[in-house]
Image 1 (tube, rainbow, N blue to C red):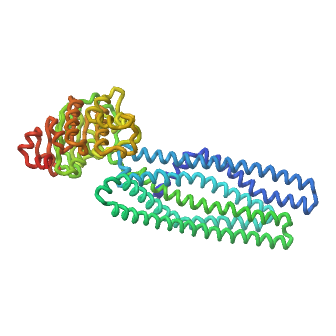
Image 2: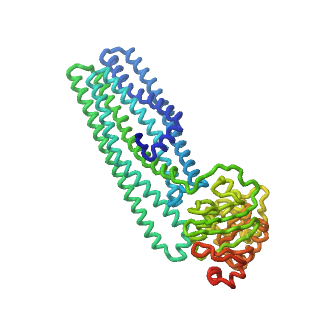
Image 3: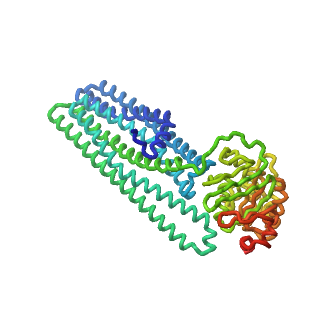
Length: 565
């Protein structure tokens, strides 16, 4: 049976393989650079041999000219090799970031489950950067191997014992370096995991800063972040110690190996087995070999960190889909807007049956907020029911493509955020060319917001709309949902942060603008429920009543408690 690849290996293969051309170019140029570096000691030895030992001035000049040409060649090859490697690294990281964002934002969902936004951002930046750096590490590793091979051949040419010492000792040294990189890989993975968690918590705390200040919870929040940050610091220090320990041991082994080469060369020269020029070349080659062998220490560290980060990226890219996507088959055609829930069970919902006719405005009141969240997830198809089905115009939602479904059914959740840009940019974010933008701004009460802003609809909005008050954000978010002009619109508590007068105006505007199109209001607001055609009450996950708002208020105690308490 074929052994399964470790998590992240496919990510590494895709990241580096996608930059095959730059990696190959960088490797070839790096090999040329290291070959030139390895030949320099030999050329210096030949120059000394001809000019000093033999007294041949012309020979000395010739080998000095050859040395100069080699220096020019290795200089340019190093420059362009580094350029190709850097291009491969940043491009690979860019493609990984793009893949991560596409997976997180994919309509079928699932990748962000259980992960804070800051944690995902850290993975898309730091982890992607570390995996991209593997491309440069491969180039450096190939070039360093070439330098060692050329150095061994040069030593073999001068002395078989010296060449065999390098050829046999180098693989052993590299194998020891590989073993020493294992603890670093494990600790690097933990380091990145803790750092991502700390970033996620920090972003979460900053986003909720107003709420924390409002309830006086800053000390508890600071204590929580200090604890998580301390865990991240501890993991980082452990990874740094592992890296320092690996580098120190590898450097010690490398120094001992090079000292052995110099000792053997010196004894051969003392016995007359090699000439003065060759002795100079041997010593210079020993000094040169410090470079390639030291680079392997860096390569091992980069590969260890890259493998750890690749495993983290693979977890997100390979996360289970929340729903199974279907290719769009054009099954809907013209959307009339009829919704039907048949025996629906999911989370707290139990055997929910509900029919909503095309063009009807229906309110849904829940005694438990979890019922509302579960219903919204199913209507938006962020999840599929455990039992039963949701149908749109007689077609099961699971038979529709997600893009097709989202174009037909817009679910505007209560906590929808605004984006950086102007107020108008936010309103028109999902609007088509013929969208009723002006009417949506008026119906939602956003015209009052625009009238108080310095640049009107062109006023800049900061990330997540934090430059606006809660009520202003809610009105702009409602305007965005209305401007999308979807055949079916599901709104979740769109007016919790506005005053009663504004709420009544929003209810009237909503009724006028959405007249004749299917609208579902998941809310406990009496003002909004008053403009619906009928209201459905969900209690303990089941439908217990359905009637007009005013009749339910007078006839149903649980309904009165839910909407008037």
